[in-house]
Amino acid sequence: MRGKFGTFVKSVVLLVAFLTVLFLYTFCKSLSERNAFLEIQNLPVNDPRVLDYLRQLIIPPSTLPYVFTNRSKKYPSEFLRQLDKLFKNKNNGFFIECGANDGEFFSNTLELEKKGWTGLLIEAHPELAKSLLTKHRKAWFANICLSPYNNISEMQFAEANSDWGLDGIGKLLLPDTNNMTHHRLYGTVRCFPLASLMAAMDIKHVDYFSLDVEGVDLKVLKTLPFDDTLVIDYIQVEIVLVKEGQQEVTKFLKSKNYTFLFKRDFDLFYKRNS
Image (cartoon, rainbow, N blue to C red; front, top):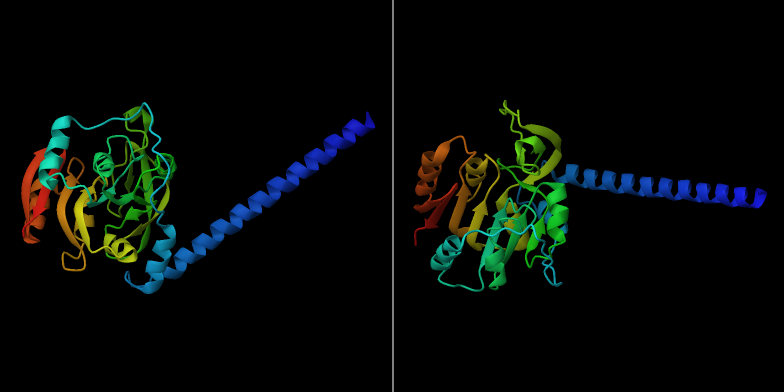
């Protein structure tokens, strides 16, 4: 009896020791990551130290086979035909999809990727990011948010309440946010200007930029340089939560030499004038 009890006590002690070491390791790792972010937060967005930090965050494309679920939803074939028409069946383009969700559910870029495209997927929500990585997309991935300002910041992130029917959909809380009836605070996310990400990846030309950031889309667009350091041919913007409205988005992009092409459901499509 004593032998069994002694074995049990040893097992408990070993388990407690293991959990303590695991906790300390996780805590120290989190503290180290936090300190690394604080060191670069107030630097210029194109500072080499910022770009090095981003290179460590960006996960390269998977070399493993795709793993998709029965949850997969695709856009109607008409939308895919519109994309084919826009890109003239191009099979080696580069995309950016911000608001990539889990990398599968109503993905704007998955079908392009299957045709040989690659690009950068951006998703701020940590749980969706984990799910996305299990799909083995053939594109780079960053679990951050695109900053609505021309600086590096850390912002509060809210998630839609499940009883609203949009569980998992998140949005940034700007200083002027005053109506979050259908959202609950989730945590904080680290935000970087898109130009910094592209500089870190040494990308100067993007064929297709899909932007869906739940309301701060126009603010994100206004952070883009719109010069030779980053040329974007086509821009897609989800407009449904953009409080400035379609007219303001179109007016701004027109001032940056873009032409409005068409609207599909809640998405606006624009083309850069040659």
